[in-house]
Amino acid sequence: MLIKKSKDSLAILTDVVLPGETNALNNLFGGELLARMDRAGSISAQRHSRNIVVTASVNHVVFRKVIPVGSVVTIEAKVSRAFNSSMEVYVDVWIEDRKTGDLTKVNEGIYTFVAVDRLGSPVKVSAIKPETDLETERFEGALRRKQLSLLLSGRMEAKDATELKALFEE
Ligand SMILES: CC(C)(COP(=O)(O)OP(=O)(O)OC[C@H]1O[C@@H](n2cnc3c(N)ncnc32)[C@H](O)[C@@H]1OP(=O)(O)O)[C@@H](O)C(=O)NCCC(=O)NCCS
Image (cartoon, rainbow, N blue to C red; front, side, top):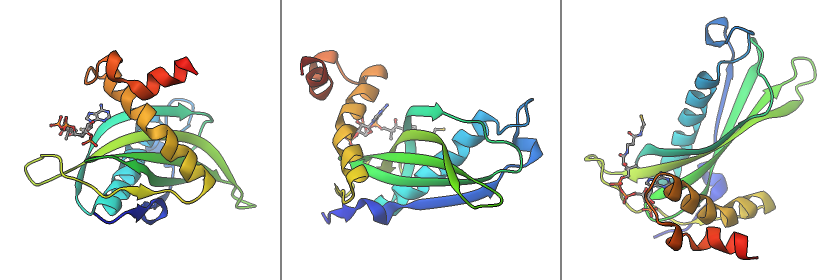
């Protein structure tokens, strides 16, 4: 199967935060942001696999800074590593300064998507070739995060989590 570049899976969503999407402090509601991140991530996974994809797991999310109503939010999603049928997708969230246009990173999430056929059965996806330093760093940590996710969801036994164990043995 063709090896694809991480950058070719890039999906960028830019949208504004409206009053109906906020919490009592007039900042973007967390669940609304997660949904937007999921949407961007699924487009990225679809671009890489050229297939139907489903969200298998949300592995990690950090809400670093609040996103006030009226903010212009840009979500960038890119496949960091592809395994057999699953793909790890990194989702970075930025807000834009109205006057200067400067971007501030406010949030980050790591999702797992699985490519499936029309019956929902997993199908094989192409491997990823990282190019930049950041892509390489994310690629190299992906197997460890996959094992952690499988362990937490009861899909892997601790004795089989070789990459995780290596982390503690260093
Ligand atoms: C995700 C799903 C397709 C997995 O199907 P399955 O029959 O269990 O298939 P498998 O066990 O072969 O897993 C398929 C891949 O997903 C990976 N996977 C499954 N659960 C995972 C998890 N919690 N974390 C990380 N990877 C996971 C497996 O490791 C495997 O990866 P690989 O093929 O790259 O090695 C299936 O559970 C599903 O359809 N879930 C519902 C998805 C959905 O509806 N999402 C939207 C939420 S509303």
